[in-house]
Image 1: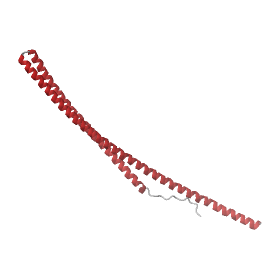
Image 2 (image 1 turned 90 degrees about the vertical axis):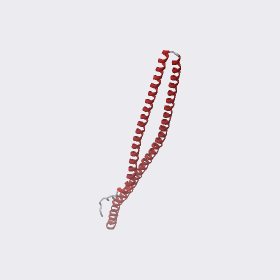
Image 3 (image 1 turned 60 degrees about the horizontal axis):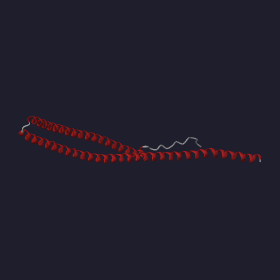
Image 4 (image 1 turned 45 degrees about the vertical axis):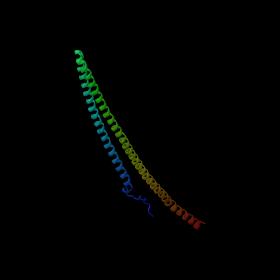
Length: 192
């Protein structure tokens, strides 16, 4: 009879870890997509800022033109003759029309830019929600896989310990029982 301890069977660990590696790879890809998305958002914000700077320059130019025409009008008022009043009225009407036209053009450009920004925000929100959902699903699947592997390892360890306990109990009890029985038999045979 051998009293050597049983050696647990070594199971290859590469096969159970393959789905986990695939899920971690998918998680890494999703995180890379999220980083690329953030870069795109930074570019969009820079483009929107450039557009707003151009519109501000247009507003400043229009304001300078209107100021120049009003200054001309004030200079003509100083002359205060009838011909200058007609010219003054015409200058004021032209300045008002130019100001109104430029204001309407800038308002339309702002409205178009705001609609474009809103559409990009909706698209961005959808992309973020989709990426968030993918990350959550990947994390949950990874955690479920890890929990399953841990549960399998616990079950294997539990079965292994149970078998070791039974085996050790039997190895300790059976020889003692046989030895005790043999002693009682010898005692009863020679002394009884």
